[in-house]
Length: 493
Image (tube, rainbow, N blue to C red; front, top):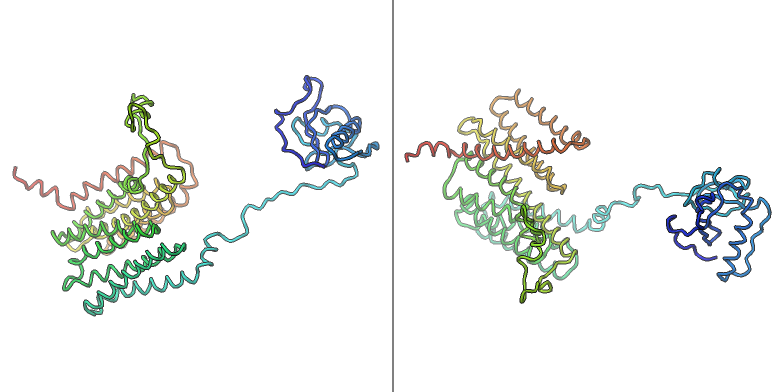
C-alpha cells in the first residue's frame, strides 16, 4: 500500500462534466493506503457498485507496483463508512446516509465493528509552568541571592545608626563596587543571566548608604545628591556592560534622577513639606506621560512618518532620503531586520516599566508630603491627591503590559489609602470610614465587574475625558499649594 497523499479541497477535484445533473456525489474514497477521488451515485444502493469500486482499486494498486491485489467481491461483504462513523448498510444509498459532496469515505467490511475516533481534548498541559521549572532549577542561587540581598538591606539600615565612622562607610562602598564589578565580569564570562542581575541588585543599597555616610558631617539631605549620582552611575555602568536587567537599572536611574533633583532643590531653597510634595508629584505625573516617548528614543525605535492632511503618500517615500546623483540610495540606508526591531521593542518596554515604577513611587511620596498637616489642615492637599490618584489609575488602563498597568493603579490606590489615613488623623474617623468603604467598592467594580463588561466607544471616550480632566486639575492645585497665585497677586507691576 502507498501512503495517502494530502486530501485536496472539493473545488480542486476533477469530476466528469455534468456530475451535478446526473446525481453524482464528489467524494474521496480511502481503500487502505489508496485514495480515490471520484463521483459516486447518490441515489443508488452501495451494494450495486461497490464491486466495481473495488475493481478500480485493485487496478490502481497493481499499476503502482503492489502486485496482483484482488479484493473479495462477495455480495454484501464490503460497504462504505464515513470517516469516524459507522458502516453504511449496502442496501442504502449515500443520500439516505447523509453523505454530501466533499465527504471522505472508507471501504470497510460490513461485519467490522464501528470504533469511534479518538480526539485529544486535553486543554491544558499537565507539565508544570516554565516559571516553576526555572525556580526549581535555580533554587540554590536564588536562596543565596535572597540571603545576600536581605543582609545588604539590613546593613544599609543599621550603618547610619551605628556611627562606625568613615572607615565603615568606605568599606561598604568598596563592597558595593566589588559586587558591580563581579556582575559585569559574570555577564562576560558565563551565559547565566542570574549573576549579572543579582549582583548589581545587591550592590545598589550598599553603594547608596556608603556614599551617603562617607561625607564627613554630611549625612542625610546634604549628601543625597552625591548618593543618587553614585547609584545612577553604577546602574548605567552595569546596564552598558551586562546588557541585562533593563527594568531594574532603568528604575534605579530614573529614581536617582528624580531623587537627585529633589535633594538639590531641598538643599538650595528649603521649601515646606507641602510645597515640595506638590511639586514632586506634579513632576512625577509629567514623567509618566513623557515616559513612552523617552523610551522610544532610548531604544532607538524607528518611527514612520505620518502624512499631514493633504500630503501625498508618495512624498513620504521620496522626500528626505539619502540620494546620490538624484537616485535614491536605498542600499546606503541601514534597514533593521524583524528580529532587531523586536529586540528594540523589548528594550523599550523594559525601559518604560522601570521608569513607570520610579515615577509611581515618586508620585506617591509627593502626595504624602502634600498631605502634611503640621501647619493646619487645608483642602487643597486632599483635592490634589485625589486628582493625582485619578490620573494614575486612569493612565494605567492605557498600558498593555500587566506590570506597567499594575504599577500605576497600585500607586493611585496607595495615594488614596494615604489620603484616608491622613484624614482620619484629623479626627474625622467616621468620614474616613465611609471613604474607605467607597474606595473598596470602587476597586471591586473597576477590578472585577468592569473587565467582564463591554463598553461602547462613547463610554471609553468619556473615561478619556475624565483622565484629561484629572490631569488638568493637577497643575492648578499644585500652583495653589506652592503659593504661585498669592505671589502673583502680591506683585506690583
